[in-house]
Length: 271
Image (cartoon, rainbow, N blue to C red; front, side, top):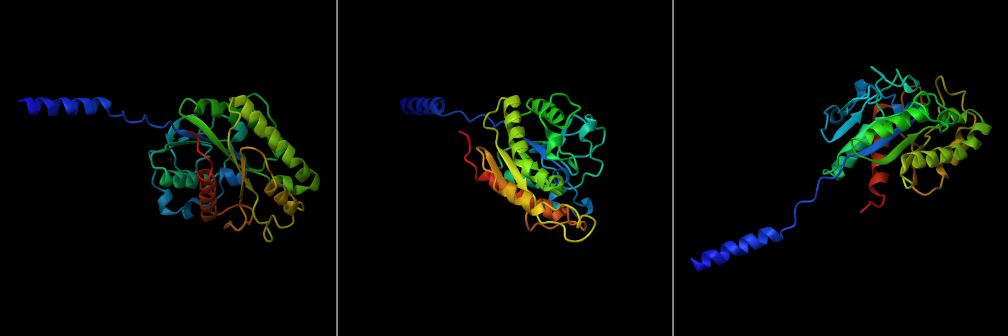
């Protein structure tokens, strides 16, 4: 009887001393900003099977303002609330592949994706401004709404092709981009908000865009040389492209998502 009592006491003490399981990590929220290659132009028909099945750990704060399972096209304009960023041509972009690659390495994570991109936009169109009728203000409003569903963890930014239309636009790009990053961090009260910035890929040599973008190489070099705290440059060079040679194919977008995930996972993680 005494031995049984001692054993029971030991078990009780051990149970009392055992550490409680850690609380689940809050969802990580990522803002998807930029122009058409972030919105996505990959053909849905070419989407690889692994991207068709929804993962309950990856959700989307959609353009209609609802939280749902993330499926392509993430930037669907169906029932869009903020007309300023409506993109009727949205297809497969890099963000879902990014989320799936992060989840594969950190299966305990959950992710919320927030589309904000708009095809054809210059960096000047993203000038910080309040109000849901501006690209910046619309994205800021979505970010604040998404904060109810998780912790804003970072920004995926892919933009610049439009600014390769002239040397003057290209040379003004870095200042405008860093001003945007600074404003976003201030407005969200996240002074160290990480930004993964995609530098533009290969210049179109054939097709409808071959005669445009005289400052392509200059802008690409400018973007690759960006150096700022909390900003990581992820090159889009050598990725598979659609027939127009300006936009990434579904496979190219998926590979870019994986590059973004590698860059994200390589970052020092907060305690």
